Image (cartoon, rainbow, N blue to C red; front, side):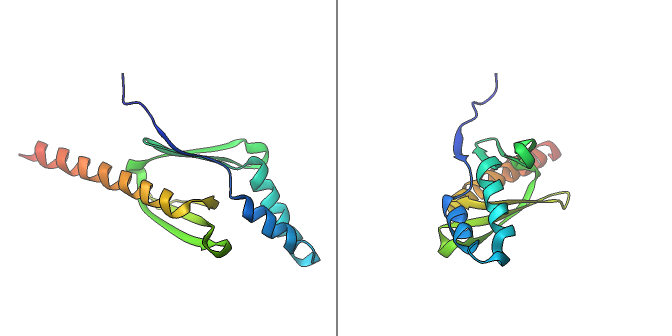
Length: 133
């Protein structure tokens, strides 16, 4: 039996993203942004747990990406919507990047992920230094 996986956050993008982009659709120029926000609102889902970050998205929500904390090397956030929501960029150790768009509570979630990444890297360095002795 392993350690129980505890859910920290589970949900979709911030509703403010859809509302703001819907108002912008009043001009024809911003209609593609509104369609993107609508697709995110319908099919994009985030799940942050004590063991992994999961992103379900894509057309009809058919794409799933799971990231364990030991794969993550860096987390950056960009505030959007006056800071009510934001985008998060997760850079993996192999150099690939995963973007989480319109994430609610993005600062708290980034801090939670960074704590888990640090804990995993400290555990690895402890194991490596213990086996080197």
